[in-house]
Length: 214
Image (cartoon, rainbow, N blue to C red; front, side, top):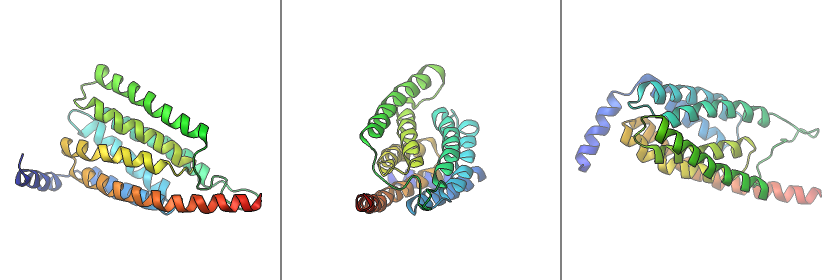
C-alpha cells in the first residue's frame, strides 16, 4: 500500500466516522489531558468515552474487537474505583493516594498481572472468538488493565504501561479502519509521555515532603 493509498483511505474513513467514535474520541482525549494534570475530571470524561468506545468495538467493528470492547467495560469499573480513591482525603485534607512510585510488591503484582492477562486474553480471543488480531488485541488489553489499576492508585508507572498500550493500539486501530481512534491513540502516546514526565517530577516532590515530615 502506497502513501497515497493510505492517505485516501484515511480521508474516506474519517468521512464515514460514526458519531459514537467522534464523541468517544473527544471524551477520552479530555480524560487523558485531565489525568496528566492530576485532575479528578479524568474519570467522568473517561467514563463517557469508554462506554461509547465499548459500543463501537463490540457492535460496529467487523469482526468485533472483543478484547478492546470488554476492556472498556473494565475501564468503566476501574474509573468508578479510581474516582472514589482520588476524592479520598486524609485528616489534613491531603490526598489519601498522592502521586508516587509503585512499591516493590505493587510493581511485581502489576507486571505479573500484565503477563497473566496477556496469556488469558489471547487464549480467549484465539479459541472463543473470531478475532483476526488476537495477539495484538490481547497485548493492548493486558497493558491497559495494568495501567488502569496503577492509575487508580496514582502510581507514576501507569504512564509507562499506557505508552506500551498506545504504541500497539495505533497500528491496530488503523488496520481496523478506526481513523479517529488511530489519531486519538497517537495523541494518547504524546500525552502519556508528557504525563510520565509530569508525574515523575511530582512523585519526587511528594517523596521529599514525606521524608521531611518523617
